Amino acid sequence: AQSVTQPDIHITVSEGASLELRCNYSYGATPYLFWYVQSPGQGLQLLLKYFSGDTLVQGIKGFEAEFKRSQSSFNLRKPSVHWSDAAEYFCAVGGNQGGKLIFGQGTELSVKP
Amino acid sequence: DAMVIQNPRYQVTQFGKPVTLSCSQTLNHNVMYWYQQKSSQAPKLLFHYYDKDFNNEADTPDNFQSRRPNTSFCFLDIRSPGLGDAAMYLCATSSGPSHNEQFFGPGTRLTVL
Image (tube, rainbow over all chains, first blue to last red; front, side, top):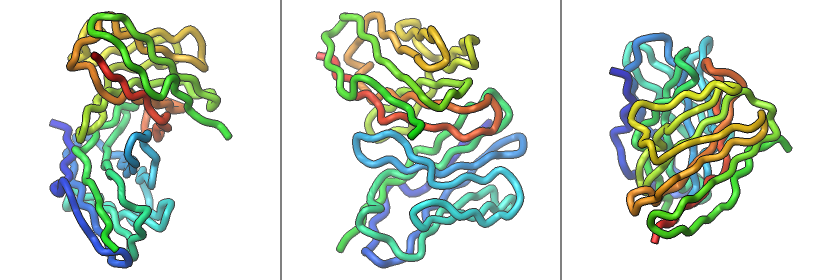
């Protein structure tokens, strides 16, 4: 079955600290992987995506993610978190199936001063 | 800027009173999606249009319908809203049905009294 797992429901980090949000996927074909961020009461904004090529992907707002096929993972990282990064983060996988995205349950990030 | 617009941002309706949510896009994308997102949950795909072709998810209740009169506009109709339909409704677009990224609108928060 196709699925996305984000093991951490809620993470709290101190401002300036590094961040890693975990994402594991199960997908029968070549996966296309995405990270979206959602601020309260807002829509989803794309942070970065992986389709092919270099497995380390750079995104907006200083985020990056690394695709590891052997581990079926696509973890999101940021070297230094800012208070404005507090939001909900969703990992998603898609492919050649009508463009449907399968979302993980999301990880809520809190940033403490 | 090209974008996805949803109106209204907040909608209050009464139990059983039909309601229509609107989505428009200036991206000229072929595919438009409607998602339902309940509190602290991942977005759940209700249906999508690829041009004029309507694709309903198997578990989308009959209470939810959609119309796409032209490329730019797509509507979500809830024929008889129940308390369980209170949620954020997200519209998204994509340039193709394959692995293209989806662009999300800001959402409409629906309250059912």
